Image (cartoon, rainbow, N blue to C red; front, side, top):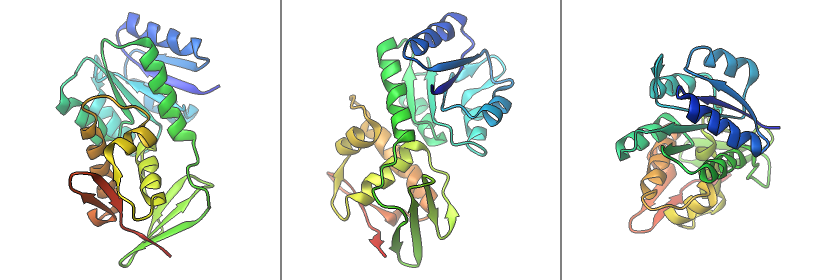
Length: 228
């Protein structure tokens, strides 16, 4: 049974979310604030974290930024802050999804399932796939679900890993934002093109050079690495 942590100070919302997820056969642990969450994540290693942004004992964005220094646990923000800038900030920090309150319980459970599938799925068909771009080498290790750049592990979120694998497996073919939404993020709602762009921006930053992923204006993206 997959384990989910919920960090939410509103008792009714937290208990309702926990109830939805328990009905879907998830093991749920609840927190009223960020106190003790870091220690619990390190100790129990949950499969997913649902995190409010505005908490009485801390800021969810700040907590998530610190979280990414020691954990790659899949992360979903659940927040009343609905502006585009807030959603983009969430994805830039390393969230896998951002759900705005009020929300549909069915949509919440579906999105949780989608994020967990991305995190658990081994998308590569062969182990040790090695790509080269200039003097840089990018190695995908399917067995450990890791990406290594010149021997150093990249700290990718589940969504970033999925997008990188999808782009590279497409060879030199151009893929659209809609394809990335469908194949990698598993949702397709109006306005989510910016979500794809944000994930690509974060991925390029971690790869150290933007030309690993080329922008094809008017259509989408293309992976520029060559198989070694």
